[in-house]
Image 1 (cartoon, rainbow, N blue to C red):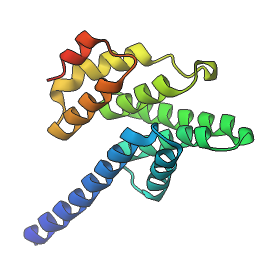
Image 2 (cartoon, rainbow, N blue to C red; image 1 turned 180 degrees about the vertical axis):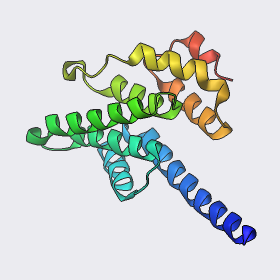
Image 3 (cartoon, rainbow, N blue to C red; image 1 turned 120 degrees about the vertical axis):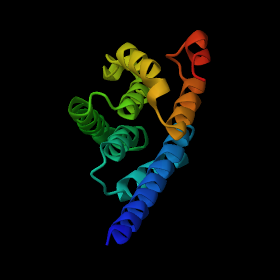
Length: 160
């Protein structure tokens, strides 16, 4: 019985981590083109999970959807995504990946939107908690940092 439960747990964890990897990979290139953005939004929309990180990517997809949608829906999409992301972070304040998602969203939304108040806080949180993360997330953080507008060269160099 224990073996069956262990196998089931491993099976679920494998597919959940592959879901997360697919979201990360798609999100990393989502801002490069409308096609990539639409692909990420589609992948995020298909995910159903109680994992707060997957929900964080779904919230980021809502914000990104504003970039590729019609004028009338943009404000509500940004508000919905930002509110959801803020709620997730409030419930999971020590989750580094959620902070990284918010950092990337706030870096990339136009300043006129007004959603950029946590840039410094999130950057400091990600940098100070980097060493505690698993190898996959460390790699993802390094890739983000390489293209980040907020992180300095010295800060990027600390990510080893």
